[in-house]
Each structure stands twice: as structure tokens, then as C-alpha cells.
Image 1 (cartoon, rainbow, N blue to C red):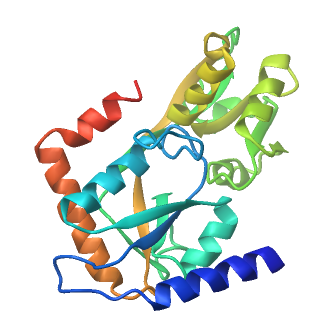
Image 2 (cartoon, rainbow, N blue to C red):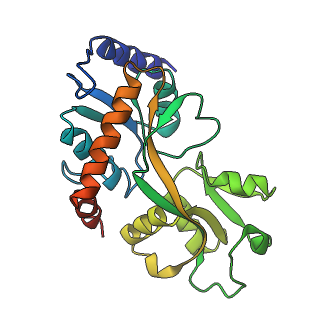
Length: 248
């Protein structure tokens, strides 16, 4: 708690010194919070490969002459700071009812395919819904939004602190399945050299991610409009796709 208070106070001092120009640009850096969520956001990435969402957001704001910075923190802590307006907002943020009173949502910056992931030797029925997976032992990463699908169906699941720990137990047979964004899961699996040991069944395709801009942050709507304008330009001239191609 002391660490959070100290960090939040430092952010507040920084933000209090920010001044804004007209509706076309901002003069000083706004800070957006992200968590390590490859390939969308990569805390240990290089300067030109910080995850395709981070790269797109930096490029979109640069296109409209607006300087921003990205700070990586655990998601729960980042959410608290952003909701209070102590940072500009959150990166790679799904739209939920609980967030709607707190944030403005940008145009979609990327998409996720929600899937049920099992071992490659799975021989059961096509898992196109959780109803067909009731007999499987599920796992879930702490604080992942996809856990809510399991909770809604009253399905128990073993919790893990990271994707890699969960994938280790899945391949070892400790659990049978988990529900997660397929893009992130297979990115981790490729890093671990186990992508060929997994099989996925798509449940929900095209789930959009946004940047969530805090309604408590000064000139929040201006930041929102500037980003949407820059993003549109990136898509029109092909820059958006070029950024995503770097991660294939």
C-alpha cells in the first residue's frame, strides 16, 4: 500500500504540471498505464517493439503531435491509479459495465479471440461452448477477465499467478483446459516451445480492446479525440498493419 501511495503521489505531482494547448495537440506527456500482456503489451520489449498495442498507441499520438509515455505496472494497481485520474488511462482495456462510469473508450485498437485451450491430444467433443466442457478441470490466471465466463457457469477453476505457470500445469496434466485470449496464449506457448502441444476451440471471436481514458483526467475527451484521429490515419496509410506484421 505504501508503494502504491508513493507512486500515485509522484504521478499526481507530474500530472499537475501538465498544460494543454488547443484541441489539436497537447504540450506535455500524458502517462498511460499498461501491464505485461504479450503480444499486446511487452514490458521487456525493445524501443520499437513494445507490443503491438503500445506501438500503435505511440504512433497514433505521434501522428497528431501529442507526446505520451507508457508505464508498466500490475493490472490491478494500474487500474486504481487510472480510475482516480492519476494517469491518463489504461492500454489494452476491454469495455465492461463496471468501467463505463470511469473511462472513455477509444475506437478499437486490437481484438482478441476468446478460446478454450486444451492439450493437443484432447479427444473429446468440439468445445464450442463451456457447456460442452463441464467435465474438464479448468485453470485460470488471476484477475483475467475470461475467468468471469467460468464463474457465470459456476465452474470451479484452479488459479495461477501467470500464463506460463498455467501452461506448465496444462501440459503436465494437472488441469485439462483454460479459457483465455488465444493470441496471448500462443505467444507465450511459442516462447516456451510448447505451441505444438496445444489445441484451441474458438468461443468468441473479435472481442475488441481499447485505450480507456480516465474521466477524471484533465482534457480526457481531447486525448480521446486525438487518439481516434491518429489511429484512423495509421489504418488508412497502412502503418497499423505494418506494426502488427512485426509480431507475426
